[in-house]
Image 1 (cartoon, one colour):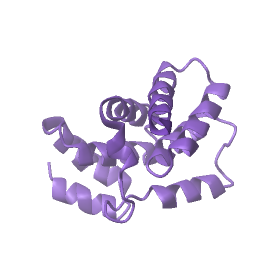
Image 2 (cartoon, rainbow, N blue to C red; image 1 turned 90 degrees about the vertical axis):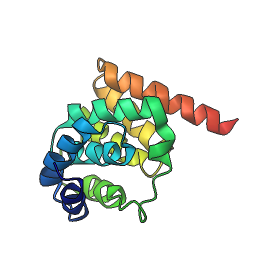
Image 3 (cartoon, one colour; image 1 turned 45 degrees about the vertical axis):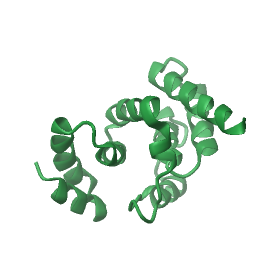
Amino acid sequence: MSLMLGNQYFMARKYNEALKELAEYFNHNSHDKSTHRKLIICYAMSGKLNSALNLFLSLVSTDIDFILEADPIQDDCPCPEIVYDLENDINYDKDSSAYYKNLGVLWLYCDLNKSIEKFEKAMELDNNDPTVKSILTHLKAKKSSIKK
């Protein structure tokens, strides 16, 4: 259970290895929002989308600003790179709801409107997903509060 090792793996973009370390640490320190935020990315990048979505929903419902205020440079957030790679990967099934869910999660670290757009597309493809419905409710409520 090494937060330091998990963070090193995360910085090296070794998401599977980071996931193991950070998940174990987070099980004992669930109040640590920084680890929470990194775990979401690790789950998403390790192909564990449901786990990523559930953690994402828990953070979005309690403190969406913690994600929105992430600084890609200071927080070593890889999301801009990951989003670019996903959107330009010709081997990724761009007609799947999973593709848009992943992008929705990752875009929130950079752009609320893009995140909403991607989750709405995921809902068009699979409107029976209660987690995505709940996520969209929180994102749209935040967008509405910003406009005021």
